[in-house]
Length: 461
Image 1 (tube, rainbow, N blue to C red):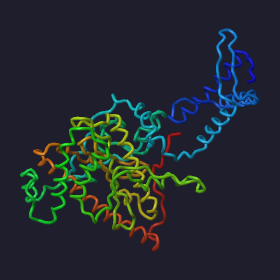
Image 2: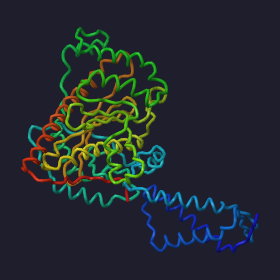
Image 3: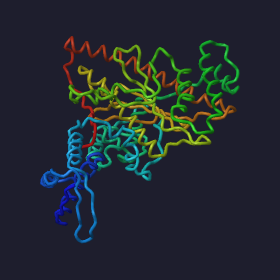
Image 4: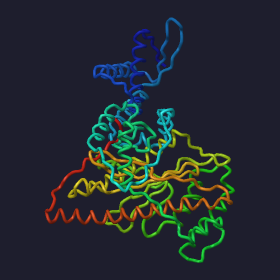
């Protein structure tokens, strides 16, 4: 093997160039606040090119430090070229790639960015009011846009506002309390979430701890599924995977309460069509298409003219022993951000098709989502409010029972899911009505085409 000795200063410069190259790669992945000038980038490239030329005739090269007599083994010239090529391939990827946010490989790094001290307890939307509250739309939009510009680059990917989402749960402070309170009251009236009481026959059933079967065939599936959950409660005290948890709790409850004709519900690791289309919209058609991001549950309207993904579900981890959730507070927050972005993409997918409607009509479209952390269930709603802003709020929450003697608590989730079913039926009516109106406005030339102002951010730049 040919060996040669280089000057210490020259060696340090080359090592420095390689380190800077690695630093650029890391920063491009994490979205850092650091920036590099063009002349610095050029010097890095020149330094690396010089290193390649010097190593052209060496398969393995040893550097000798004259002062300390330390031998440093450096990768072969072929390895350096291969690493450079991989770096260039990554830099040439489209900015529409969601991989950094949704990829499991990057999840640990993203969780580390989240400051748990700044996370507050989530708050539900207030009750709907009989008198419509005044909506400070212009002031809110101005303040929200100002806030978006101030988000540090390294925090954009985990901040709902970067994606155009105004988080009304107050888990993070985005705007002042007055504007948030005003927007929350407006959004609560728009959603009009008001769960009804269970029928008297079901009230009696829950009072009897779900043990006496109801003499009505329409409740047979609910009874059978609750008995299935009860039979699995002995496993709730030990370690459970995420898959086991959702398949023994939310799946049987949803199937027992929801109308099977309303939505096509899919469970497991299910691809979101909305994110699939969003990711491939600006992608090279000659390359392999990217798959959409996956959720634990997806509900698609079956009878609407547009197959709208109206409901998403996300389960954050499984269970430790004694029924404790495995997900930490930061993991819960990250999953909520992911859920809200998929809800946004679902709305965007439909609004982009409705080019002959007013913004006021477009804003009537609502999408729902839910999260499960251990046995705690949260229900969310989202709508587009114009100017690239989406309202996202917590409409209801409950806790599932874990003991066979506490099955009367199932009445809570029953009332919540029945109200969710009612709201989704309303969304179906809205989809049908606005799709028809969009065609009439277009073909009868009642209203010309207008492009809605949507937020289509992908990866932070």
